[in-house]
Image 1 (cartoon, rainbow, N blue to C red):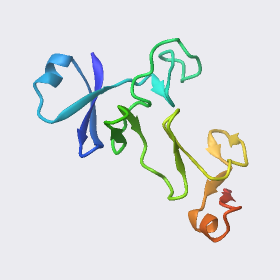
Image 2 (image 1 turned 90 degrees about the vertical axis):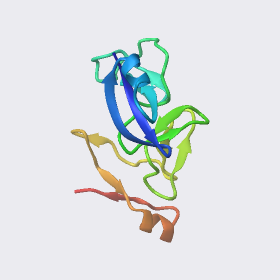
Image 3 (image 1 turned 30 degrees about the horizontal axis):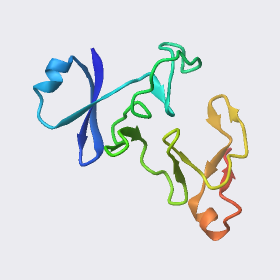
Image 4 (image 1 turned 180 degrees about the vertical axis):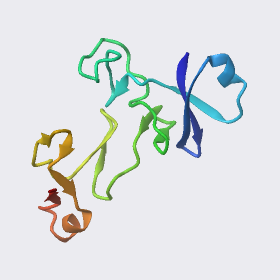
Length: 130
């Protein structure tokens, strides 16, 4: 069994686990995706994406509902979070124009991006989160 994403107008609308024969019998466009693929790399299953296993990355990232499927590059990536961010086409993730200034604290960011602040002053954008 494999994971497949249903694509409508370049957007992922559903992700299911199914056999290829079932997918072949469905209407619409379905594209295989791998939950072991993130940021253009393939990771060992069941390791919280901490160890590369040497496998082949499949389509940039694991597809999520609402994600974009770029048929030209045959990759999945998240929608653009802010107007000023740019797409890293090696990892297929969005990059802010200013590097993240903090560290992760218990899995939650210390800062959040504020696009209005960035647009007013292109040397600022991250705001402390408390």
